[in-house]
Length: 452
Image 1 (cartoon, rainbow, N blue to C red):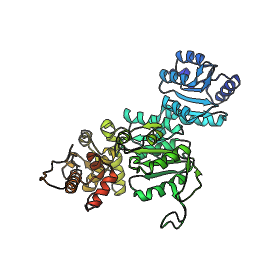
Image 2: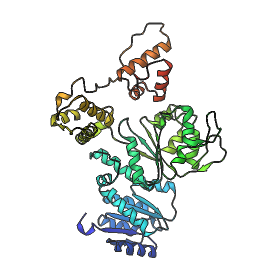
Image 3: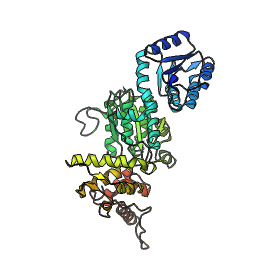
Image 4: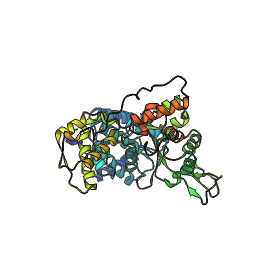
């Protein structure tokens, strides 16, 4: 983009008064303004060159703003596009965000609203790393795979639709959810996280939706659920695939009606909450297996996002490793060690099936078990480094006539041994849920502390 266009905005609106008002206000803020009275004129101007910012009405006599947006993004993927409409609907907003719009404002708007959106979104469109620096949520890395995921998350943050994040364990799904919350208009309201796998099934319903006094034995006082606590903000439903089938219809109703009813109550409460659901398994596969309701899946999967595994962004390992080493050294009240180049190179040669979490744990282990100013390849000893997980559990020798329960117990023990007690990895290898792993450990009387 040449210097003449560096501060030029294209304003597209079929209403002359609106066009003039937008142009006048933008000019007072230091923008050079070009205007177009419809889609065809806008496309002509975009054909002549790209703009850093496009502000366009959605519905016009000769087309719609989505056409303008697609043309602008085709000209320059860095262009920030803000859509204005008097007929705002959630499906329309979602379509806009998926297409690349960075904000979606419903008329009538104040110029303060527009200016605030411009200030925020120009940073997101052109300098995603700068936007991350301004946030308290630090997502480290500058690989193309990560920056692309963060750009999509920034786009999604401007919408008010629910988000589904599907990514492997240890990639930072909760961190991404917090990033979306902080970049959204809800950032000044609560961010509430619920781990659907960590709570017993009989407590999860009360935790999510709340209860009134006397709703069940032990309910000595009324308690609001997480949906109410997150009012106006964001509710993270972590490991949504672990949500019991019996609770899924109630969650579906809450998402559809935006009303929440406490256990034992007959009066629903209106809620204004954005839901971000995360999972490390394919929900679509769970739908096909009958383990997850298809209607709930499609209701959650409004804006699908993902995060790349660490093996797909190995160029981020030097920055991550140095960050973890410095952080853990600070906690241990010692100087941060120097990571030698050959040590970092060896880190980049590993596949890291546990992703960023595994890398973090490894660096913590290295610093705990060593007390050196420099960390080299000698610290990659078998006593320190995590062994690679086997692709499949070791073969079991089974005598004819062995009972099914005994066989299941032995298979579970063998898999847990192979994963060094990591329940999440064991669940993935066996193709069962984390909740099932936990229940089976309890059922067969296996030592729970050993298999944490």
